[in-house]
Amino acid sequence: MAHPQLISVDEAQRLIFSLAVPRLAHLCPLDSALGHVLGESVVSREDSPPFDKSLVDGCAVRACDVSRIGGELRVLESIAAGEVPSQRVVAGTTSRIMTGAPIPEGADAVVMCEYVESVPTGSGRETVRIGSAEIRAGQHILRRGESIQRGAVALPAGRQLRPVDIGVLAALGVELVSAVARPSVAIVATGSELMPESGQLGPAQIRNSNGPMLRALLGQLAGRVNDLGIGPDSEEVLESLIQQGLESDVLLLSGGVSAGIHDLVPGVLDKLGVKRVFHKVNLKPGKPLWFGSTDSNGVNRLVFGLPGNPASALVCFELFVRPALMRMGGVADASPRFGRARLAADLLVRTDRLSFLPARYFETEGGAAVERVSWKGSADLFGLSQASCLIRVPCGEYRLAAGQCVDVLWL
Ligand code: AMP
Ligand code: MG
Image (tube, rainbow, N blue to C red; front, side):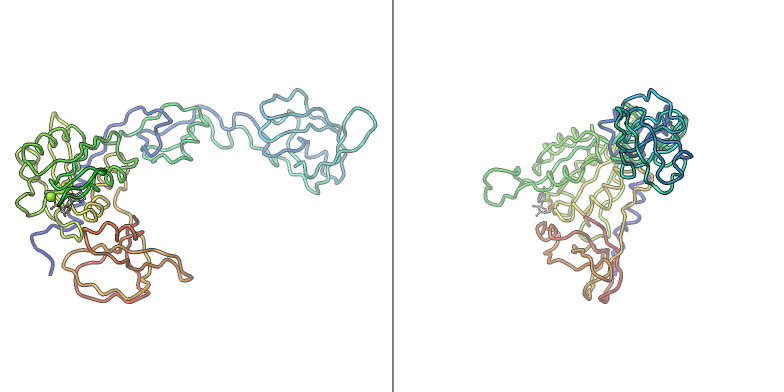
């Protein structure tokens, strides 16, 4: 039942990956590094923490002094975070210490303030009684370099930077990181019926939803985004817009790649020397997808002709564009990530293409479950917006029983 003339989704992904090569690394300031992939490992130039520090508010003590319950100690000083201790803790003494402050010489443990009781002495000197049963040498102290030592790898090459990693880099005083540059992306929404997002619709006009949706989907995937707006179905205008779009690493077109007489995009791309790699995929929604590449000025640029129907454009983005952009940005395993979930109800499948069905995901006592949402097909973006995932169903005629596990792609 499969279409012999359509290439499979797997084959399409393979062809795209073979052309989506990682870009070169560049120096990136820390405040714009989030989501980038490290081109080189980051080696710590400092010990962290840079000094032995207290992890709690309390008293810095010699563990041997207070191993018996009720040990009374004379207080030498109070050390706040950011202050340098001035006195050595010797037998029978202690210093009050705050979280983050350096451990004074002589002390080898900190007792939490909850276990410290002030003893009235009558004199001006403070004495405390330690009420903790067991004091371990080293307790509540983080030693210099215990978190990371100077010269050790703090973050490995290939790591995609998350907020926690930005924190690590900031902690180590790193201002610039070597990061794989993210591809620049241009967007052109084609179709003579398209209107910009606002304004009064004329007869037979619709608004351009793909342009803004693609910009939103790009999120952190792209370096620069150049939205060239709407191109009517006119060879001259499309030619000029596509030429501008080819200045970016990746050009995303929507519409104009199906079989209609006004679907001019493949012809214009061909005329401009963009080599077709494939056209049409065994996929529903998303069959009309066009993909090609061009080598201009020694730079390889990728062109995706996404279907005009918004749901098709979105599915093609998730299956093909997102992985390609991730890979160009240096992500090693950029394949789409599928989860598993149980069907909440029987699912009757009757499809001649690999299909993705909009579905709602929810938690049950028995684990993750999915159920289809009402959806009118590839032109129905509103139905799709009720979904939190897509159920992947291979082609054929069959019934999937409730409770059976299926592959889902998160939206
Ligand atoms: P096409 O791929 O150009 O044949 O378009 C398929 C369907 O998608 C048509 O109904 C178009 O009106 C619609 N369409 C094309 N481009 C867009 C867009 N940018 N936003 C919303 N719908 C679109
Ligand atoms: Mg069109």
